[in-house]
Image 1 (cartoon, rainbow, N blue to C red):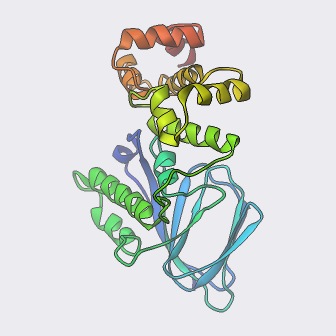
Image 2 (image 1 turned 120 degrees about the vertical axis):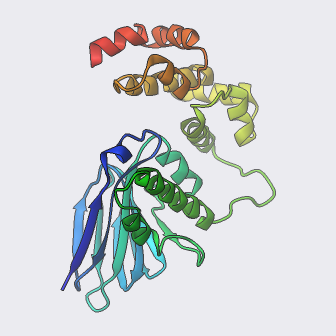
Image 3 (image 1 turned 90 degrees about the vertical axis):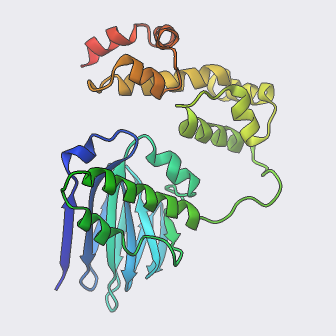
Length: 277
């Protein structure tokens, strides 16, 4: 008989912006149990405790077993099914937030590579029981959030090493993609065009030219517009002040932020908020 245990987080947890734990659970699948094809709007990490099954995404099929896992990427069509003779038992945890994608990128997890193999010392085998034990007491939201961060930290530790002692060589498209990944993970800090260029080992003028050819704007403008687009999303959260939003996209000076926002969006942050709330 199939057994499913699912738990949703408390409202306090859902107030988190950087990383938001949504729900978690455990399922002892019946032979041949299947889900999909379908989409999710959040990241959902599955860890397999026992048994076997098949996970399919992007026309790729993965046969997985105990000690391995797969991650559902938002808006990516997936299909997975338990083995008809040795069905798997897995636990899952769903999350989203500003830090979710950058942390998964550090673990080399993407729609093109959505699987992982756990280390013996990782917390994947115990996170479900730990989250259940956290309960609903005072401070449980912070404890549950720390467990989620530990899961992602272990995911990064389990990822294959890519440092071979020399800088990797990419195609022109590859350099642009790696630059955008750096921006996505670091835009909230005081990064510059030089920082981006150094991260991938290119001259900043040359890299800026690649962005000009690809997007019609130099890298400095691309970075500015990316930050302001993120700011428009954050301004729709009434719990954040304009200063909060300013710091969240890399501007410690809210006056400079307002100036740059109006330059890109055409209205001040306060005017934009009045219109879109």
